[in-house]
Amino acid sequence: MNTVHGFFFPKTASGASSLVPSPPWRYSGDLLTVEYRTDPARVRELLPEPLELADEDPGAVALIWADWQSCSASGEELLDPVLSQYKEAFAVVRCKYRGQTYSRCVYIWVDKDFAIARGLHQGYPKKLGSIHQTRPHPYGPAPRIEAGARFGATLAAADRRLAQTTVTLREPSQTNGFVNAHPMAHHRWLPSIEKGKGLALDELIESGAASFEAGQAWGGDAELELFEAPTEELARLEIREPIAAYYRQVGVVWDGGRLLESGTSGAV
Image (cartoon, rainbow, N blue to C red; front, side, top):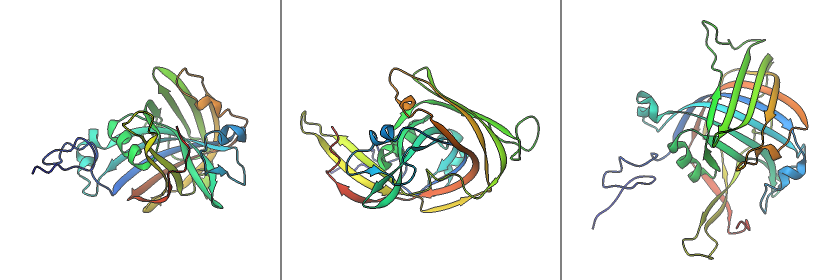
């Protein structure tokens, strides 16, 4: 009897072709975060049962750009950068489950297939996109991490620009924002192969960092624009009031989550 191996497809005799290795997954990244308020009803429509709006600031949104290097426990992908480097942009809201406040990623775009595969496992609704952001550097014309530094970032998908921002740093900050500061409450969904049979996988899970380290956070101001697109709905989270913007370098380890409940989302 033949046995095939690999954490994710394709599974082979050796497992070397698997799109992603098994966790833990390690990340080093530069994050630009822009927080603003939208209509809470637009947040509510993205929360399937049993999730509810957060009690405080229910319309708060964080739109985050991230320039990542990632790897498995061995770190070997860092020496083959095409397997470690990727960028993403994602929208995070807050929600409540059984009295506890969670963060939840409602939209996310990445530029590598292995990042999509990890998202499927973690419950992130990842799609392909084109993401760019200004990188800091201590020499030449690139911005330093200091007061007055300006960073730009753009997001596009399916040849349409979805968002763009310019962030100006003002001063060191004690936080990197509050919207994306909780454990994540995500759903893992997979339709049944049999037509009309609903979901074969329907799980509400909690996920978060197994370990976290970070440099000094910087706060500032942002100019943010969202754009309509035929197959994207990010612009429904319309900007009603800016909150703040942040820059921070982080290191994260992800090593699994826990099941909260299954079969109750009502998703179709």
